[in-house]
Length: 93
Image (cartoon, rainbow, N blue to C red; front, side):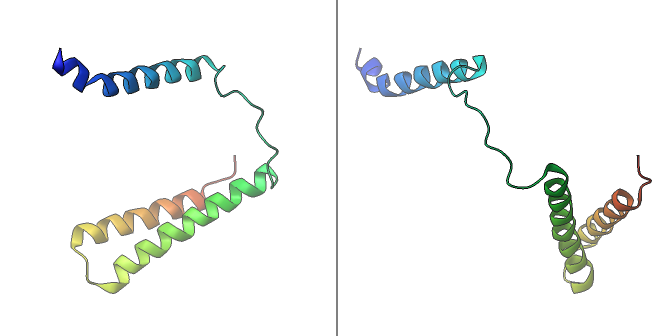
């Protein structure tokens, strides 16, 4: 009986977490309309792609040019830059 009292808080927390999860999955607990996007969708998508490209390109070039990382890290950097080039140079769909 003492062990049950010891874990009663944890059991209550898990029960509440499960109940909230089930309600959220049903779509009724936290349903509200999404606010309008502050930017047009194509502009936001391009900004995200460009931002991610700059971040990966900067990391890859730093790893390649600094010469203080292992050969495996340099292989990753060359591969990441190659994937970026492939993404941006692919033919338009």
